[in-house]
Length: 335
Image (cartoon, rainbow, N blue to C red; front, side):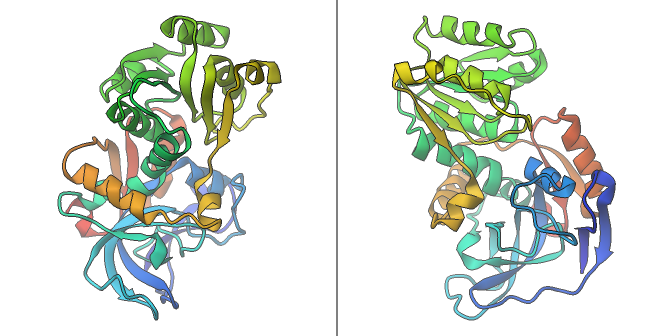
């Protein structure tokens, strides 16, 4: 089968198209013919050898995908060949930058009609992360004020929509006027251009927009120095959810920025959650059903062939994309 493999860590140039043997599903596993695979920042970190859960090369990257079940292993009763599905790595798949992949049946969800495979391939990472953080960790409710950082990102645009649907007032922060305006199209009540309001000015703007109270929830998808700002932006009894460090830098925390407010800091990492017993299927099913009836917009900016994974990573690292980048693996990706 065709695949894209990493034989050594490095830049996008180490993503090499190769021919490899077809994987075989073991007990409790499913073999999926991949139609589309989502491209994520975790893929780029893995490729560069900077992902905390990266194994050693050779590796086939890819943590989310959609396609059609080809074969099921022993003990799998709830799935059958021919079903359209989306799949999440969970630390146990053979890698989704490939025509075929094996994945644990506990990380596979049958898709409802109305969700095409291209968009389905973008749901298991960014959308599931946003869903879990907004719905389960932060417990966003009607009337809450929610700050979403990097609101033009995949997680950000999902979080804006999920929080807005819950009845929250959403303040979307993004790194340019264009990105802020785009984030506003997904239901944010207020947008802030952090290229203008940066550092202390960002905190001051959030406090101004909340009449000095601070936000009920801050969803921090940036990390690094931005996390310290998040602690200053949250209000009394609020929740700061930390789910990434795309800045790849240490965070300096002053405990006086949160403990006097009785604020909570909540961490989230999807793979770790799964390794400790989280079953993603109920949440993924609900997400897919909401997408199927038009409840959420799932923006896909670029679809490129599998063999052009290098170009996809180059585009990702330019940080100019609006919406997800997807690898098209099979002809059914548009269905």
